[in-house]
Image (cartoon, rainbow, N blue to C red):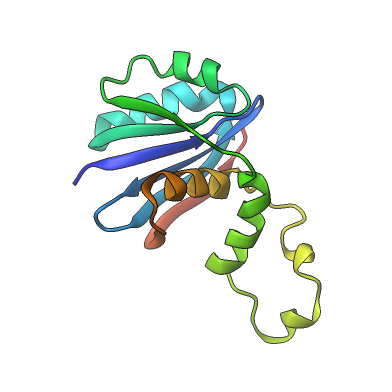
Length: 145
């Protein structure tokens, strides 16, 4: 089973997801400092069968492509327009509000959330033209150190 990485590049932080296309499952969804991206992908590539990396074509995509030049598989840039905006809606699809929380404005639940990993997910879903689900044991972290 080969896996794909999708990256929402940013000047200071990047969103990254690792997914398997035939299962339509996301196995990792993280946010990390841009300076750690190369090492993280390099280490991930050692333990996972990664066939392709999709990089959003926005902020710092050229720099990210240079950092990933060690990768022997295919690296593709793909449109990321409005992914940050769309990530808010996708958040509620993945983590629906239930119970009395419905009485509060939706924005309250995402005020302090970093949605870069969900932006990376949207880039991947747009590229593959399918929706992915999260693996039960998903590694969903914000790593900004």
